[in-house]
Image (cartoon, rainbow, N blue to C red; front, side, top):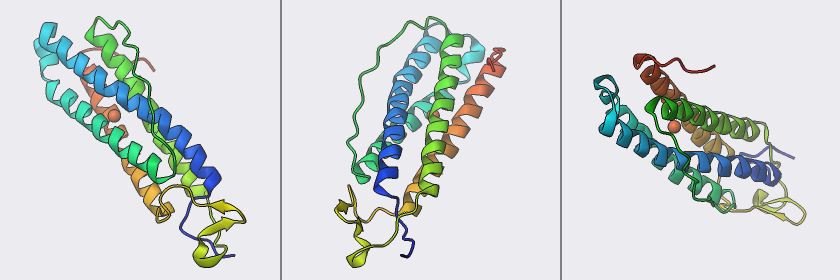
Length: 181
Ligand SMILES: [Fe+2]
């Protein structure tokens, strides 16, 4: 049976699970960036004020990612859901940024893991027009969703998270905060 540009239904489910966790992280980040911005405006040093634009950009990107990931989950036949976050106390900017860096890393590895699964996944054409993957197994979600498209989206998200990590790392260094390894 010929390979087709599709992800198997089983792998889609695994990817959906990873993406749901990533969506939660992105959502947390939207809220956290706003809180960091608030703290900096309130009691940040002159040095930290330089990073307001960076932080705004990171927050906006997280918002965009949440929407993009939700749509990918839907196209793969899943249902995006997330719980409202429990806001923990993070009184100082340093702490917030260090936590933020952890979240950026978490998001990046989630997209990377999902991408690797998509790359390895190989659906075979079966039945009429390859619409049936195996007897009784129907394509969940968007029947036109290609494997190459999923990989493309996940790769873009992974690259952007890498950029975010570097931006937060730079902010930490320039504020004289040593990111914990
Ligand atoms: Fe990010």
